Image (cartoon, rainbow, N blue to C red; front, side, top):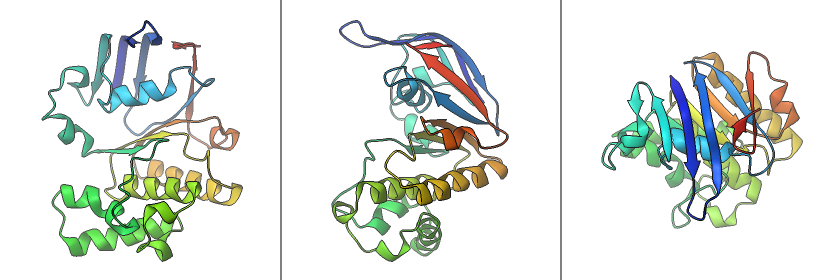
Length: 216
């Protein structure tokens, strides 16, 4: 499903985030990316979602060369991808519910169906009672859970997650990890960058370790 072939990502100023990465992730796999801060985990996720483009090498997702997609094609790629990144990218002028239903409305769902599915997603992450709240009133951990609800509401085939449990207490971290495991069991492909040892203990997973932009 995802193939990296000798991928290099170099930023202006000369910093090399990824250096010659070759990696395959099969459909239905659950893969954890580990490594120190700055090892290239977040960059790898962003290349899959075409948020970043490789400096050299080839990144393909479902047979598409995502590094060469034009800007009009990128939204279609992301319709089947759930994204959970550390900066959240929430819309602070819209309620928790409006943030959650946004991917469904973009995809053309009816508002009635979108609300039904959004409430189910918010319930799973423990935020259903906050559906009318504005994101600014949420704690950092609650914003993280909102981001996860928005990512899973469209039931994507591919879920890309960057440090999902970093701002969560142990109880909700366990809930979120269980939620990812449930998605994996129904066939979703999941790639998670994490330092959380609890995540690495989940069954039927693979761990990929990065060190200074290379596969260790």
